[in-house]
Image (cartoon, rainbow, N blue to C red):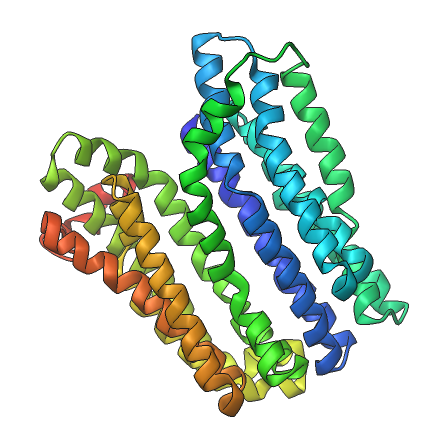
Length: 414
């Protein structure tokens, strides 16, 4: 069952990634670079703020809903309400602050946040289907269709952004219906909110930093270089979501075994899993990045003839992702070993590195400076935990288990 859930999650992620890529193609083909960059900037800002406002409530809710179901404890609906209220309030406050700059688009912030928390609740009940169907397939495809229609109608960047935001409303309604069917409203159990947020609050910081790290570069490019370079940068780096799918699938498969091995002090077994996952990550992704680097001048033309000039951005992206995959799933291993504080510190250093490099390089180099800043952050995010794993556990991404993982017997495990 867990394998099927993992495959279903990958299918949803794959559909969403392809829809996002198609959305970028539609926008870059329909709009001048400046207007496309304005659209990408406001949507990146909305998703970044929503990621911060979520306070990582979804992961905490999954934990408590699953635990309450296993123990047949009452009050699951109380956990849902406790997890839903603070992030929604924070998102509403952010919407009020951003309304003068974003206009009606800011109203989508609490909708995105509430839908994410409710979908997390359904995963706590042991089903991934609502997340795959709503977040992975229905919403991205509806966004693609809505933005495509708006682009054909000649809508402005603000109109395109509103079309992009519209599908989040039905996602919220359907997610709420899915939760209501599984957790009918019941009496509130005292202490529920305190218990949930005592567990979740420390993780909120890491979730917020991760949300900033994912999209802050697009916003900085728009602020320092203008919307046109932001469009070029977004288009040239959009392919990274395709290469990241293999890492996501391997992480879902390997993480439980790493947790068990490190908890039991089985460093040899942990090293075997780490090295097997790393070599398969390299085997699955390096051909993608090498092909992208070689074909970038032609591949980027799908966004429009003007975007072929972003080939140097694609080269830096491909090289950085090859270095990152060669390090393996270092952060997954580090958190599996229980070093969540070190993981957060590494992420903060990576964000700081990205921002400082962006501020230094974007004004003079535009999109190329932005990808250099992002590259610096990614390398720091991987090399720091790599050194920590070597120092604390003697773990390496490559070693005597590497070739064994590629043999026929290792295929099934991979």
